[in-house]
Image 1 (cartoon, helix red, strand yellow):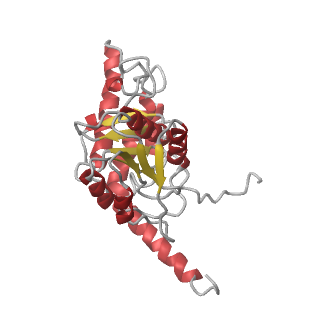
Image 2: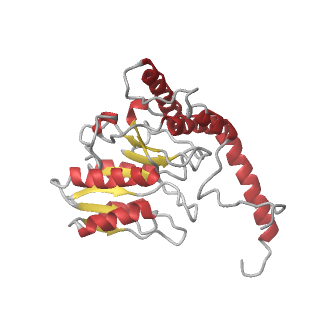
Image 3: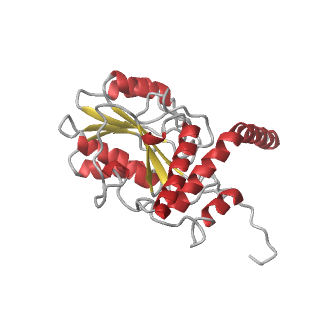
Length: 289
């Protein structure tokens, strides 16, 4: 590629560029002129940093229809998936070791279940239909008395197949089973109201909605029997669920990206529909398509 060639980038399902407004928010917190201090510190500089974290939590919570204290910051969706699945499976292992998922899940989910199988857990792998969609009633028949966790994603990262997470969650709750959703591809793109949806754990990341790489979040519902074992130890941050010094610039960027997504989501969806219809109009007459 020469310097004059312009890249046509169409892989936004894998990652998006950072919105320029988000980039400004991030860069302002990186140097000595900004609020760069450790947000866990009790001195004034630390408290100023913690205010940025609290603001971002409010912005993301507003997008998701939940409370900021339901969110735990992570390094991305992969960590969120691992923490939700492995942390819950081990915390509830005394109740039973049966888990349910699909082979079409992202590797950040599927590989965790394969690792758990090697640790003695039993996993049922449900097959979706030809369109990649799972029949919720198929899930209902797969649940057992010892089933503790179901993980079914919202939107598939390769096919775009969208699952009925509301009905799946209802079935899980009817059987006292924890329901985890990998919503990496839907947060910021489709409306979500986590306080109304019957979901318990929701994984997400910033870099799918014009935020920075390296930061994500895990939603944890306010449910008495929902206990998660931490994957890491070393500090009391984030209710001891996920210790470590918080990356304030990245978190602030995630929050700003979420705030922007909340205001542009409807227009973005309509634009995507228009582009889809335009594409289909141009290729629908191709033989064999």
